Structures are given as C-alpha cells and as structure tokens.
Length: 227
Image (tube, rainbow, N blue to C red; front, side, top):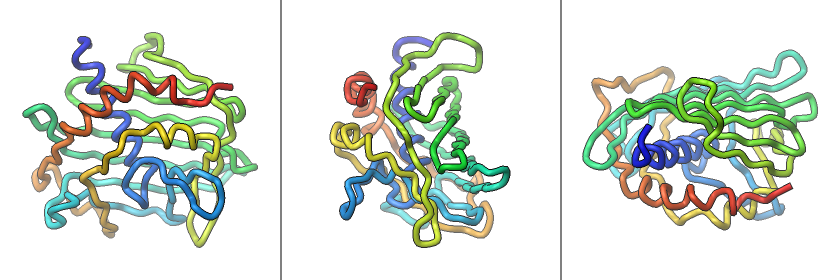
C-alpha cells in the first residue's frame, strides 16, 4: 500500500465506522442532552435491513446494511454487515464492511472487530479489554503490526432503552468535540429485505469527506483520552 492510498483507506474506515455506530443519526458521535453521556449508536432489538440512500436523492440507493443483536450465552453480540458504492477522487468503487461488537454480562464492550474492504485493500479496526480498552487499526489481512494503537478508558456500554439498545461511551466526549464538522450525504431506509443491488446502485461521492478525514486521522491519537 502506497502512502497516498493509506490515508484514503483510513478515512474510508472512519467513514464506515461512523455509519456502523451512527445507525439512527446517520452521522458521527452524538451527545445526549439530558445526561452527560455520548450515544455512539442506537441498535434495534430485532434483525433489520437498511437500504443506504442518497440524502439529497432518496430514490437512488447506494448500498445495503444488515444489523442484528444476539443476546445468547450471557452476552450480547451486535453484528453489522453491508456494502456501499462510493465515489472518491474521480472514480467509483464498492466498499464492503462488517463489524462484531461483543458485550459481557454487565453490558460492557469486551471485544470488537470491524473491517472495511475496497479494491485498494482492507482496513481492520479492533478493540480488546473493558477498562482500559486497547484500540488498534491494521491494514490488509496479514499479521503486520498495527498502523496505530491507542489505549483509552472504558467501559463502553450497551443499554436497553425505549425498545432499542444504545451504545454509550461518556468518556469519548473529548473525541466528539474534536471531530470535523460535516454530515454524511447518506440516509438509511428500513427495508424488509435487501432491495438495493450493485447493478442498481448509484455512487455517493465521498471525496470532500475523505479529504477532511484524511487530515483528521492524523490527529486522532491526540484527540483520544489517554488512560
């Protein structure tokens, strides 16, 4: 992977992570006003499929997203799988992404795995531990060292509320204040099954966001709260 491709993949990884954890707001981290907490995402109890659509052109689709929560074996596992056709720097390509977040019996995140893959390669994001949490980002599928590693305070929690699950991380308020100001040009529509195919998809141009996040990714470690 060359030096030009790396920030693009990192930026795409942050974009996809925003999509994965911002399931209701369709944006990045959202602060909860009534309590000083940070709601990373709101997850439906039942398995659900979203069609990824253009925010400004809701008749056009760009991908699909499947989400489920399994509460067996005295733990909860949030699973996300999907794909999206996006435009970047004058070309279009498809990114596939998957994520698994494992919460223990106390509702605390104990491990997670996210992967985003495009024709340029693959980026993996993972966490281990409850408190502290070790977060790592890798490129490719081999056993190469992480691109970067950060230890942050925990826990990140999964809590039931109003018939859904909320992923809450009050210690990440500092990160939310450091995020660049932008909105993903994406909306999510609940569909009974995967109604968008790659033949139907119209690419969503992420070039401005990728350029912004490429610069922001260089500052992430400084924004994360240390142990």
